[in-house]
Length: 624
Ligand code: SF4
Image (tube, rainbow, N blue to C red):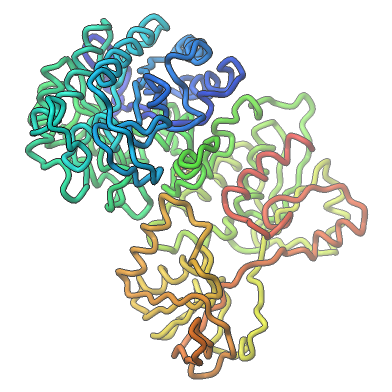
């Protein structure tokens, strides 16, 4: 850890340690609350030990906004919200942003179709290019006036500056394109203008490798890095990949620290501090990277959503919860313009709504069920000073996360549960394992001041003839039972996909049969394609629009979309066709008139996912 907590420096700006909180669009930037929620989000991270914090992208003009919920620097309301952020007292760099073809104005160097918005961009005139450069500079100057400590120019992820740099998106023949030097010109001029506009350190988030077929060659990227430094960059923050690139960069299946070698290569060619990031979710891993000595700073973004006190905990020698790389409540929401939060920390971006306050007179709270919803409810109650007891029927906490952690790329789900359990115990919460609550315990339940039922879900049975044959398993038992060499999974949701991934990675031949047109439609946009690609590479066969006839000892008999009867041979058939509430205790408690609240699957199995389960566990305590 010692390398993490060595002071750092960018230009004239001293830094207390070597971790940078990277830019994240939160959806709070345009909230009409005078900046209160935005400032509180950042203030909590400052109190939690964050050093340099790069804000989410601030659009330099209206056309460059990444969506309707982006802040635009020409808007006085956004400027006053930013001043409130700068006033919280941390070390902030304002990120100067223009989305180019992906933005509200859909402008770009050339008329190229955005694969994110599906619209064709309007080519920028020379006057527009010059105005945009001036707007980057004006945005930087406003950041200095507002009290920011640095600025970061967003020249990565496939946004406007990248679009000028790449031969894929810059087809101009004037001096702003044509050859490699012409394509670099826009980014270089932006940095030069920003440098001239401020006395602050200028960081440039630049693309170390765009991972785009036919994109910017490595040698050109290296020349661009050097040119950015010549133009006045005081540090390079190395981004990897465009949003459109066909290579996953930040999803859970990407190995941790995978991209550090790219940043290390950049660091060898420039003489300013280089920042690495993209897939670093633990301080211990950042420490390993810094110990190797190849880069100066490590940027972490989503881990600060998962735990605002990440740095303070590490300083005190405590472990944090981990960002599991699911993208469900952060990147996937920001892609559709919804307010960002975090699956494992549902308070993220809602800090004002759910302040950390202690009750004057502590209550005794019973939580039945130790899955994500129950644990979150227990922890939220314990943080407010309640005396909490969790009753878990099985030998382990975790609920559905105990299964999820077995899926490739999801081992961190187990770490989250360990952390929640440890934090709950540290706050004085008591956990009773192997302690099912039955109707014999209703008097005990009545004795608490508050009763929260988080009894979860169980696999929903199907009415296909043969479903009770011995080689037919529910998804829950399939994760922990021996499977035959040929496995057919019945179901088309996220659990069916997880189970197929789990079984195929263990060497089984897997086929998924499902009724719908589209497999796992609820999986998030940033992740679905990565998971489906992993299944394809593992040889998993997926057949949709089937009508099930029966299950026999030979396998699953079905009618295909074209109307032919087929047999999918199987040694094991797994039913992963949804889930239903475990409602027995709920009904008994209700019948006895015992006051209670329901969270997670106990509340409703419909549309249940881990994001809702955690959020339920947070919100239940405010109204109860
Ligand atoms: Fe990480 Fe998932 Fe939270 Fe996003 S929602 S910060 S990916 S745990």
